[in-house]
Amino acid sequence: MDRFTSLSGIAAPLPMVNVDTDMIIPKQFLKTIKRSGLGVNLFDEMRYDRDGNEVADFVLNQPAYRNAEILVAGENFGCGSSREHAPWAIKDFGIRCVIAPSFADIFFNNCFKNGILPIPLPQEQVDVLMEDAEKGENARVSVDLEAQTITTSDGEVISFDVDPFRKRCLIEGLDDIGLTMEHAARIDDFEAEAGMRRPWA
Image 1 (cartoon, rainbow, N blue to C red):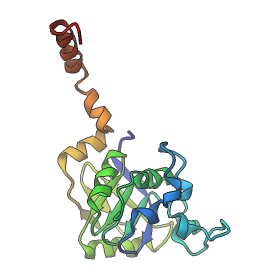
Image 2 (image 1 turned 60 degrees about the vertical axis):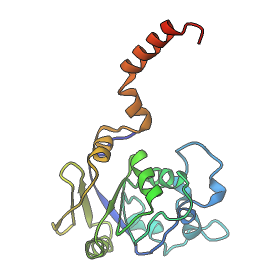
Image 3 (image 1 turned 45 degrees about the vertical axis):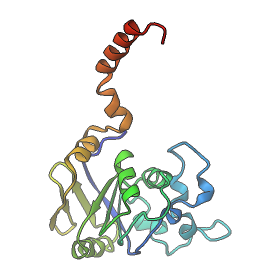
Image 4 (image 1 turned 180 degrees about the horizontal axis):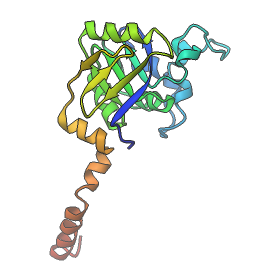
């Protein structure tokens, strides 16, 4: 998993509440088990019309936000079904941090497992970041996971909380497999001992 320590980039404003996982990545794109290639279909039904043409006024189609690395959204982001393809699509597009007043629990957990930092903040602080994001590509936002701060383009600093274990996993780039492999030596010792005690197994 890619490490996340700090990020300075363009923040895209998506002032919508209850953005569910089917809006993030529609069901017809769930056939793949690959984590790459889904970014082009992120928010597919909002980004494209029925003929496959870009919808010009959708935020991620606007020139200022095509390279956004941060998404500022409304409450209850990631609700709906528990598809892991949703964070896959977000990360494949290039977004590494999502900021919202609240998140659906399963989506929130899946973000950490896929190298994305979800940050829940009080509505008034999200409003500040949303307004800042609406300034366009010249307004770069900085996120420092180690310091647990967000700095707006105007220099305002907003602190956020994050679970220490999840913070460590992001900083060190540890997903579930990586965490397991930290104990590889003990696993090998156990298997060797078990093999001697139960050679028939």
